[in-house]
Image (cartoon, rainbow, N blue to C red; front, side, top):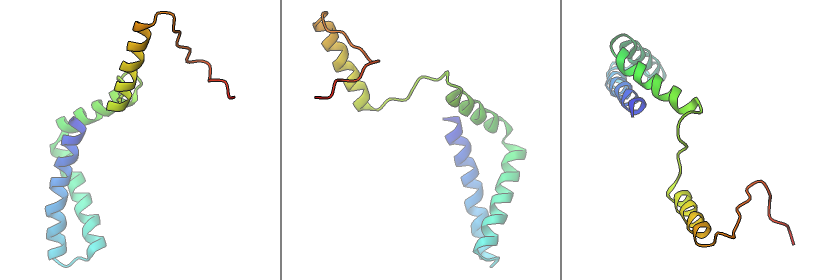
Length: 102
């Protein structure tokens, strides 16, 4: 959530700056470069707390310690497998072997 918040802050800085530079007729490419540079500088100088929170959020996600994100389909499949194993104790789940091809 912190990464999204910081991204939205930078986008909120970029868009009006871009509009101002286009209004000043700098040209599209130069307007993008100038607005991006200024949005970066402003966010770097004034939004340190949000930047550090976003960095910590990304570090936690990619460090391997975070819980994996699972879709609703994956959760439903896992629940169905758990119910099957609970209902039939003689069923063994072996993830290390692939099913035999017929």
